[in-house]
Length: 316
Image 1 (cartoon, rainbow, N blue to C red):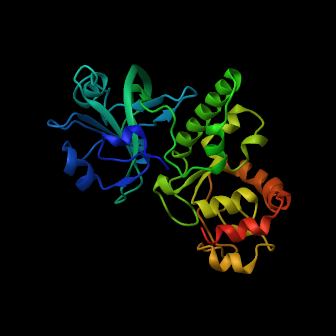
Image 2: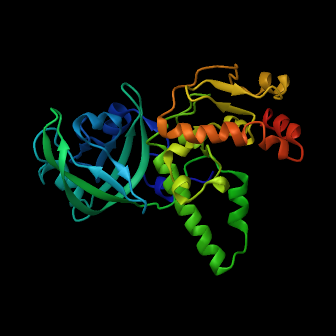
Image 3: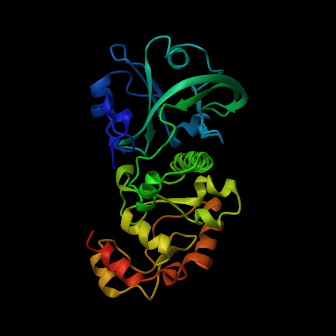
């Protein structure tokens, strides 16, 4: 996969994992705690997002236009336009760049999500603070500098489409599809953190896989719903996409009896029948039901030579 233009002049690659103390603050400086860090001697403002913020009333989210709504700092009382909040709002006037990292869990490294720019801010009333008291929060609308979010492993079909000589209408449609795919991938990261089979969390070695296939989604809402997706390593993505494996609602792995023993032994994944791979949220379960009923043990039967595809995967 070609490195993004963004990563060329930054010490981080989108999708990769970094230790906060050593690799983020050790390089750039800034406060080592909190959601907004303002290094004095670096041309950056560093933002952190993740589940830990929810205990303080922060609930960052992506809107349908691909804009991130990012809650400002301040754990109790109304948020104020000062400190880190002012640094975010005025970063362009100050010549600072906004870098966003995602928290992966306590003691875990942080995932770099890219560079952003401030577009607008608004106030939101009734947001609970750390003690559960209602207060007014500042919410920043941040636009990613790179609109197409694709740190993942490329799919062959994606590379082929890029080489086609398209008409103006088809080109616009392709741009719209890629925009929706980028939004889906960003939203997926708020639901899934790593591959459930391999444990890999570095996005550069994963694929963003729809549970209910793109072509089968009832509408655009399903296509950009982060709950309709899994982060999977390439081998796991292949097995799931073709319907060789699926999952129960409680996270138990279901493996097709038609999956050859040779593939099970050589593919490099633990495919133990019934292996627990983590619970799924309520919003994910309806999509999983579709996958079990319409994809599992159906899609690989439609392939011209499914066994050759499988054996090829074991030697990649």
